[in-house]
Length: 395
Figure (cartoon, rainbow, N blue to C red):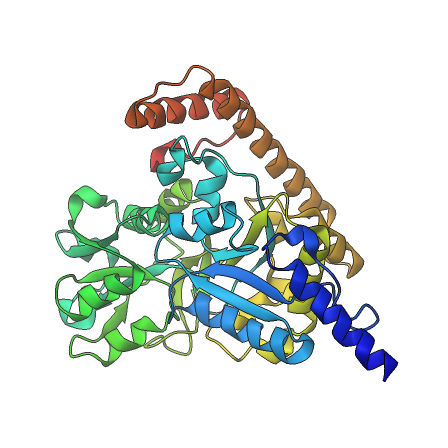
């Protein structure tokens, strides 16, 4: 009985500590058995109905069942909203996509004075049998290759440079740009697919297994995914020169995709990130739980199998990992010398960006547009001077 009372006293202590969302107050639920996780953990994610959101919910069910921990999943309809909650401390982690790279780089929507390059840290990556982002079309639009997209209506998601830039990189495979298509502006990711269903657009980008694509497949217009043959090395290079963290991939998971799969590109989606200041205990145990309980959630949401530890691609990362996550990876023997070399290179890149940002802000113009334009030039120069990739062509 004494042990039971002590257990509930521990829970009450955690609850009081969590009246603020600070990860600094992480207290173990039961030091002998349970990981050091707070009573409530918060993630930001893509909107409800997407693969990333569904996976977060599946992981949350494990946390609740096994440890009595609640995972609050806060949907954000665009890149800024998902990461703004992380920066403000309203969530502990963000499960998104390439917006984490753009925030690290301080480009596009993150080139503003209120943003700049952010010291993000990765926890885990998802590389599933699906794909993180590709081009889907309405079947009745008779678009069979990326070259056929010329002159077609393509969705442009407001406030989501990661989605729009990914589409730009895939258009580049066919030697196309946004100037070669009719841009249809929409307010969010789900709205982009609705625009195709409602015949306002013909082409949309998204993850191969994204649940909203099921609605397009079931609609009178139907669904078709474009393939990107990997043997066209020049075309592959055009895409990867714009998005170097994208890799060639065979997708076998998603509506209308045949058993043999289709040739596409992919990147980590979701990519679970936190700030460099994220609490070590929380990060370590979040990664540990996701690894140890993988078999219990891998089939609970589309693409959840991509969290498998052997699919992490540490050596190809473009964002440094949190040291507490690395500590766990070392303990289970999956962190390699090559991974550490990539880690140090990524940390150095963030240092160069941070120093360039501080130097630029000292004499930066007040006008928001002039500020962003000046920063992008200063950023490109600082990276070029160090011999680092500037990504300037896709900004």
